[in-house]
Image 1: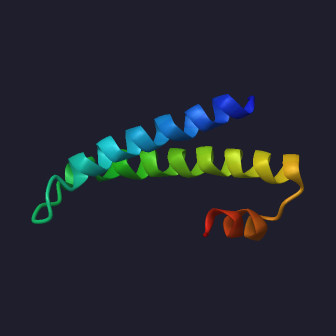
Image 2: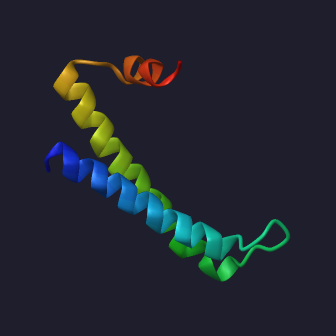
Length: 74
């Protein structure tokens, strides 16, 4: 997968996770447990997409995950 596809994959996975999270927790007073399995799956897919992008960046630029994280902070 090329870098742009990896980024698009993370964005799409995050969008799906947001949708499932909102179904699971529609407001701060409710939890709809019937959506729990879908939310957990969407979270795992998002984590895998992020991991693939992170691995690509670290491999391409010779960075450790710690170095990459430090670049994200001001």
